[in-house]
Length: 240
Image 1 (tube, one colour):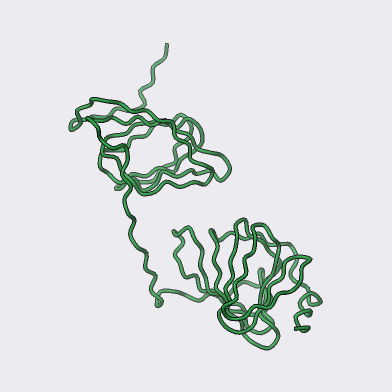
Image 2: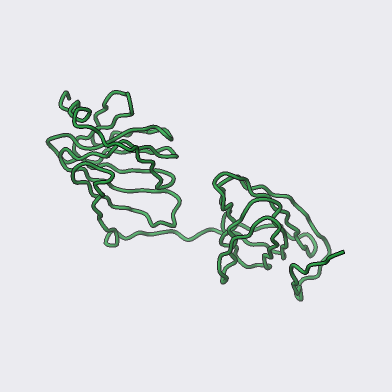
């Protein structure tokens, strides 16, 4: 028989009267909310990999078989499934004193991005034709991607797609959007277009005026098709 010490915890302030055991599964790419426990919690990773962080400590990746400890009353900043394809399953032991609650969800702080801190960047010609500038309106730690994109006359993206739904909202000027093998749709201020996940498309300005739109998507992930929009394909906007 072989015995391996995995963890040793001193529970000086806890009078243990009950242990609650739960098996919990977080779907692929799922993230835990900021939370804490009125009681100490110990557990182990049954399968998958978790991004785990207790407030005041460094984040760490825990894989199958690893153990973890969540101290009583201390915020847990991350308990996130680190895989985008495989569910995470873990066993949690709640060391209760009487009829304590198992978990407490804490409100997170509001995020304010001041307009003076928003930088305008020029898009690379690897991804666009013409002059295109981008203002990312949210910081990278926010799960949602929100940006304001300016297309100067005749500027447009290459063919591309996104793994999640994308929403475009016309802000000023006149622009165009087209899915692969679909018709060209004009976009005016206030118009909203919903582009399904993995739908190959392009969007941009017409030949005579600047077009600005707001972009919303869950994550800023883009799959670029190997070829740009051809001049013949783009010239179809002259029919409008």
